[in-house]
Image 1 (cartoon, rainbow, N blue to C red):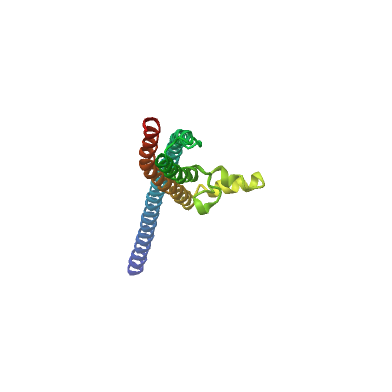
Image 2 (image 1 turned 135 degrees about the vertical axis):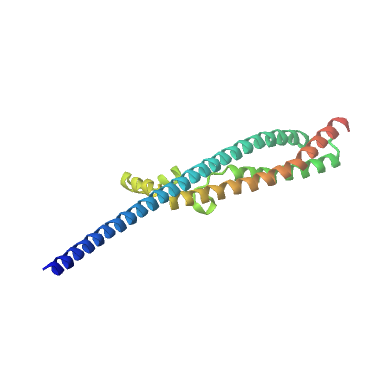
Amino acid sequence: MKPVRIVVTVTAVAFAAGIASARSSTMLTQRRLKTDGIAEQTADAQVRAHLDNAIAVALNQIARSDTKANVLLVVLTLAATALGFVLQGNSQVHWIIKAVGIIAFALLAITAWDVLRAITPRMTPKYGGGTGFVAYAKHESSGDLLQCMVAESTLEAKAETLRKLSHLAMTKYKQLYRATMGMRYLLPLTVATLLAYFIW
């Protein structure tokens, strides 16, 4: 009987050890999965925070570009007034002065075109628009709008919004850059035209 008891005891011990090992392995796996899940959530939170910050920066750059465009429009208006005063049809104005004034006025028109393009609202994604209230206004019901806003909370949607806003900001930058380059030539020509008009 003793050998049977020994076998039974050894079998029971081995079985218990197996169960303990399985439990330990299961607990380790659960801990690993929990740790991985926490790490993944932390990474997602960091990416989301980075995207939100980048979106805020892009919106700020767009607002600054619009402010610069408005300042340029004021300067262009003053230049147009001055050139219009010279080119109003006074027959006593020398033809050279009129020629320089016409060149300056043509450059002013090109510069104004770029500035107006920079402040033109973008209504479609093709030109970097289609975000925020522009996208919300396209929905015909509050339910569709709610689904849209829920979808926008994903990382992919935020990344797409950032892409559109960055494209819009870069487009405005390029247009304002061309307008600023035009102003470098326009202002000296305008000043020269006025000086020549009053001195000549």
